[in-house]
Amino acid sequence: MNSKSLITGFFLVGLGLLLLANNFGYFFIDWYDFEYYWPLGLVAGGIFFWALWLADRKDYGLLMPGTILLVYGLLFWYNVQTNWWYMEELWPFFIIGPGLGFLAMYLFGGRDRGLLITGGILTGIGLVFLGGYYDFRFIWPILLIAIGLRLLFKTRKQESNGGTVS
Image (cartoon, rainbow, N blue to C red; front, side, top):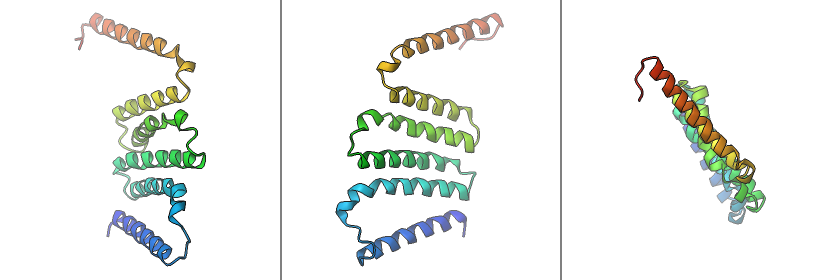
């Protein structure tokens, strides 16, 4: 039996035992309490995917759903505890979650440069929005100018070296 099947089997048996024990009144978890604890199910799912990756480190694609579930689960758990008062400011974590997933895939996976670039862009955009639009209203024009100048100088350098410009 491979380690992924072993981890998945233990996870499912454990979850089934918890639910069965709850039916017999051992945990006294009422359904109205579910509204406070459901995000921890997402966190458990994220930990499950990370555990599967730890069992087979070649399958680094498991890090994306694991990271997203962890980030979103913690975000939702915080919002449930604070009565969703801060969700208006915390929505950028919906962008940051996949960004961190790409960065985890880059760091622990094949070191594909595309993963680093995509993760950096998504995480950066999320952090900019997390800081608030009005605090960064001067950053966007400066960032666009810097990217434009970089593209212009890169194109000019390629033309002077006799390279083709695409």
